[in-house]
Length: 272
Ligand code: SAM
Image 1 (cartoon, helix red, strand yellow):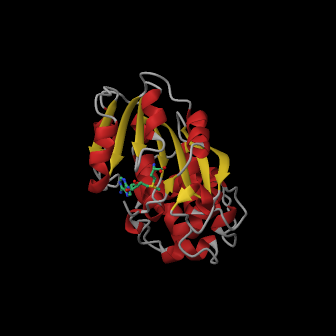
Image 2 (cartoon, rainbow, N blue to C red; image 1 turned 90 degrees about the vertical axis):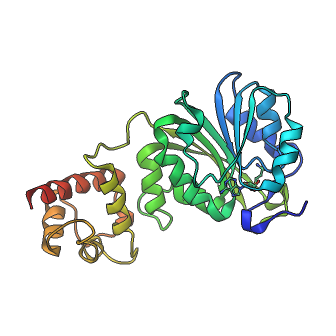
Image 3 (cartoon, helix red, strand yellow; image 1 turned 90 degrees about the horizontal axis):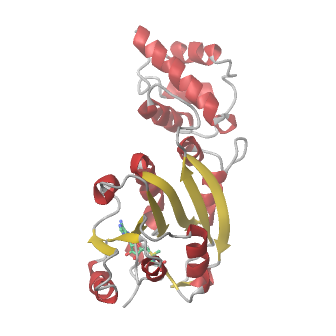
């Protein structure tokens, strides 16, 4: 069957990289593991053999019959034909509430799927994901560099990140243009920094990185209405309260600083 580009289908070939991913995951008999995009089953086979309870979510209807046939009669395998951008992962695994996720993610939607997984973190314990290498660079970036941005802050707020290994284009059919990397994201038992309003933290992070080349203050000034502030001067007051130089750029801000700023802005809104 021809791979569909619009579904980001780059199938792993051979056994070397599937085996490495499975070894890194180390699935245990009886545990709930969600696989997003099983495709032709490169990872699914080893998952099912481990005895884990595998819930595979595949969007491509053309792949469903061969997957169903291949794993027919395996009581620990469940195939769900659905869009990972629509499913409620927690409903899917209930009454379990600490599933692990493994996926060679379709590149075209890898970031929205990652965001959705983080939004469902209450029922997930760990994500082992293959992504484009540059996306993993962004996820694992430290403050101060050009890779550090919205995705780094979002992921590092809720996960401990660990880059595992790179995978060359030749490991896939068809071969993508870029290298991939496998990353392990462990959901933290508590966020890296406490905030009163988690949605406000995410909104603030978006605003801070809206224009990377602008200063923190200029981004806040441009977004003060979205932040629920009465005027741009309030943004200035908030930065003063958390002792952040308004001339800095967001890429220098730690998760902790963004969290503190979120809380001060929250307090200002409450005052209004
Ligand atoms: N796991 C297989 C492998 O490693 O060879 C396939 C990986 S391929 C990069 C991505 C898979 O995700 C494809 O099977 C594709 O059909 C599926 N897919 C694409 N978009 C999806 C979505 N929104 N929800 C669920 N599966 C999706």
